Image 1 (cartoon, rainbow, N blue to C red):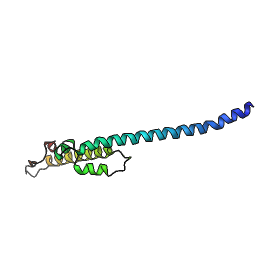
Image 2 (image 1 turned 180 degrees about the horizontal axis):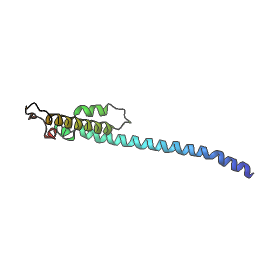
Image 3 (image 1 turned 180 degrees about the vertical axis):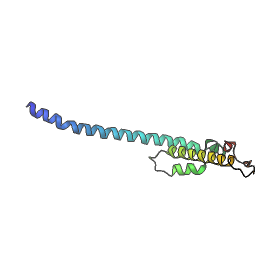
Image 4 (image 1 turned 45 degrees about the horizontal axis):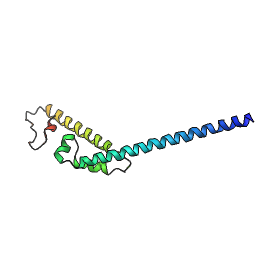
Length: 119
């Protein structure tokens, strides 16, 4: 009898591990879905801000639309963070290009742009 019991425990061990791995994956997926829904609610509060406030954060109204066009289980804040980084990078590049311009023409930003674009 001990041989059959030992065999049953050995055979059950990979099955138990597989169930444990699947369960852990399901828990991770549910946590990710919950975080995405929570962040979607937080991003909805951004939609209530005016365009000037969104520009201060570093995003635009179209960035919000793009973030909400993702499927429900995707986190919209990932898209918003990526867009904010892209906007920052392009502003820095524009400032750098203006500072290295040797044509002698003074480049001044327009007065209707928020002050953060000067950085």
